[in-house]
Length: 331
Image 1: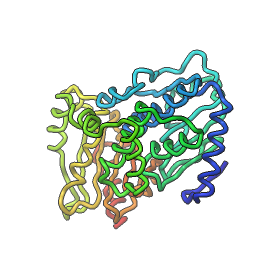
Image 2: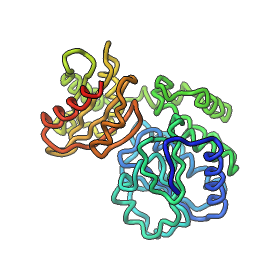
Image 3: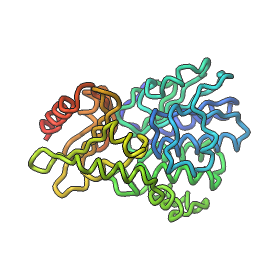
Image 4: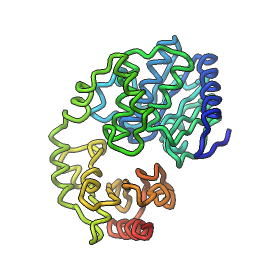
């Protein structure tokens, strides 16, 4: 099934019903998401996994990389595996919040029989790699899409499922700060609260339970703050040496990009994270004047117009120069 970035309400409902049929007809399910998962990825796989188990289905959740420390409190987090299951034969595989099959990671590629692949995502850069694709760029998050799917299956939204959906929405909207927040987003959040979610408790665990290593890393990273001279483009850098000296892990850099983004006059913020010598993960954020997803796509990455990422090879000076040149040209 092919698709486009524009999805009519009628077509969206047709795909949701088709996915619901696959859920009702299948028994053994694999659920996975992209490497280096964040809040929406973790919340989505756990929400769907718990919901399917509540239906009596057999479920395996495979994420190649560990769950970020601030999300380990989520219901079901301990059930996530990080290696391909030995009994790797599934009726249906869900790929959630993931733009391409390659981004599911090497462990996913080792699964023997994945069955029909259902790709659910909200990134406009999604490659539509599934047998069934539900890609809705108008949704705030993949978790928001899953809320609708659970209602159509139908399956009761327990407090555990609701908490995972809420965290997916909360983190991908920047605590409802970003432009992807819509009336529908608040309606889904309200439904989660009615199902038993306590916002203040969730916020405390997600945002106010930081390890010391993260703050040590942040102090080093803020020292790299730089810009293009006129204040429109600002960036920070995370190196492997910083990670080692602080004792931090890659997931602890989540939301660091909000610091250069918050500068007065900043239109585009960048974070350069060293993956290995001469290889950097670049995160891009925009306030709306620049479509950073197009820039990321030029470097084989993707995302949303206001939030995207890519991996670029070269020295730090080379990578910075290439990205900054492209961003400045986009104004």
